[in-house]
Length: 201
Image 1 (cartoon, rainbow, N blue to C red):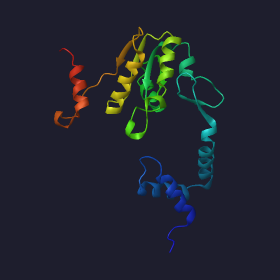
Image 2 (image 1 turned 135 degrees about the vertical axis):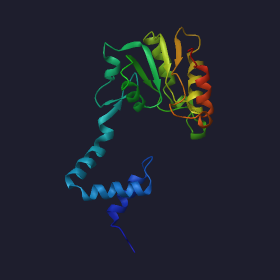
Image 3 (image 1 turned 90 degrees about the vertical axis):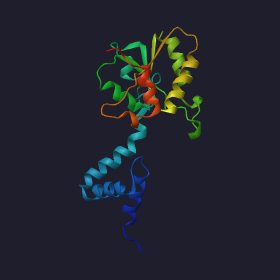
């Protein structure tokens, strides 16, 4: 016996395939779409249908940009310093850094992190293009802004090896203990970085 109409069941199943969306959340989202104005559902469907054809990647930074463009505004803007490059794993990491309002360099999106267990080898990331940018844009500093995880650390180390003896300053985002977290609950990588980045009082 069918409890839900097939169309609603299919929507719940489709939403449930999104990362971080469990069965209950998928049901709530689907029911919300159903009970709202049908026009909102049409707009949502149109937006999703047009998503892939409306977005492309910057040929230099690999940031997300509107289809039809070649380069990101964050790369072509003359106020951005092309000699400083923050290396991030995914396009949305750029938003986090931009929100600080304290970075005026450019970005380079790797497209993930090295993770052999997930089948992500270094040659699947935009590391070779990063090395080319160092030469093309006369980059003076590379800021490795990857996550403080095993994958993030492995990726950062691999990038350092690929840069080799090029005369470029390689820095890492400072790591520390989050406010309010007890030492006993901090992971080893965070603690190690906190010790390395300790400051005088």
